[in-house]
Image (cartoon, rainbow, N blue to C red; front, side, top):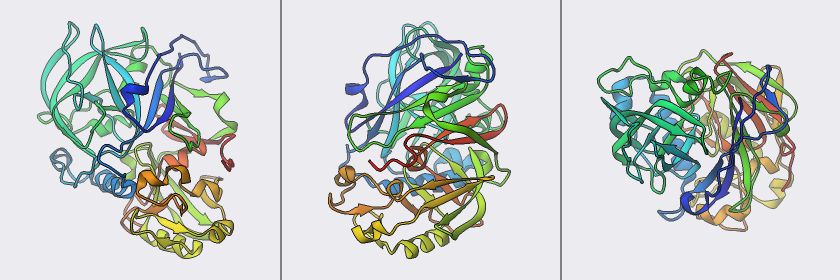
Length: 416
């Protein structure tokens, strides 16, 4: 069975725009690939302007620092030793918990693996709610929560249920204004250390339980985004259990997960980056992450990119800014992964101008989506390919075969 979740870009509270949930069932033979995607659940891309303009760079760099911190100690991870900022951009799914189900609006996150509720809407206990008595806590950089673990029924759409799914119920949370929590679809090992009294125990994720309960045949998640410049465009789809061949062109090329720490804790891969023909980042380890908006690269690579493009730092947004003439002279930014090169065109390297004011920027300026991760290369997590990379390439997160895949789409070279 394939489960596909659609994304929609919005600027306002998710609850006001997430509407009818469409659900049908489909069985796909191996290999798990489909030409039509009958199982859909709307997911909304939300720019969180509740606190005024959005500081995307601060959010992304805080998250990067927290991601790097994950392996240092499970105690530090629980304690939230990294400064937090409010969540800036999220991809929100309407998820039912309990029986009868209460709907919670949860951020879909490939960079974490716990699922939890209670940041906004309070957890409602039903006949399927079981208090495990375990304390649970996670820090994200963009926020944190602590509370109690329950197991409960999780509903994706109408009638598709996962039973006895671990759910964190937040007693306290920070940085999650306007949403109810997170549905984590990262690697299983990221849950280790999140149960306070059982630091060596891992918690099966939603994806793990979809597989173990026979709902999907492979532990695979496919993600499709489309570039968007408006507030309410349907701009993507998330598929559990396989890939949707209608969302990409050509073949998916896979690369093994990196063994380099700490990128190996996540959906980590090895890649090098060239600007035109000039190498700005030699092959190193980093991650692919839906929870990061920008493309972050090591400081030494960022300095080379800034120099090569002629960009200047915009003090208001923290982003690089270029002139129209400099945009006309931009070269492709090439991500060399395995034996394949994925080129970000000049248009793919800029933030949509129609959304500039939400960052506190000028509508007439041209801002680049590439920025510094905050540390030099050689630290084991030297880049993050965030949403602005993923909107140009179909991506596959394959636990079963320990690999990540990419393919071009009809939007890879889009100019609007």
